Length: 153
Image (cartoon, rainbow, N blue to C red):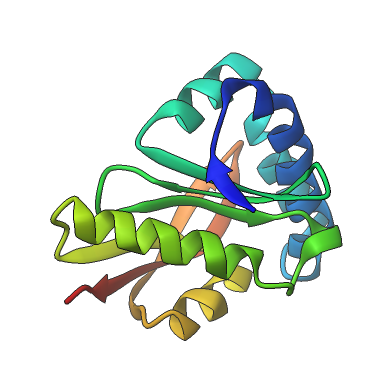
């Protein structure tokens, strides 16, 4: 089931986010990068605030949160993470499809995102095109990510 995010979901989404980064991203990033990336949700109040912006959807499987994604603002995919236990089962796709439909309903003519090495393949499959490679710094470490865009009809 895909539903809207509720503030009570925040702690479970912290765990989900960390699982996605520590388990899935570890194959594409250094141990130091993974530690820094997974720490981005340490401030629970700030993470809850970020999740409350725009449209945030969660996938629930047998009363467990399996994935989440966010559209904020109306033309940008901000988060799209799947718990490693639920990877490759279609939950990110279902959430993405709902977020794209919401973007269209809100009048967006395109969708943008900044994708990790892992997420880049997912977004290419969803019809995005690669615009450019971007280097960002977090806690003194450099991370590669990909600016991507999809035109909506």
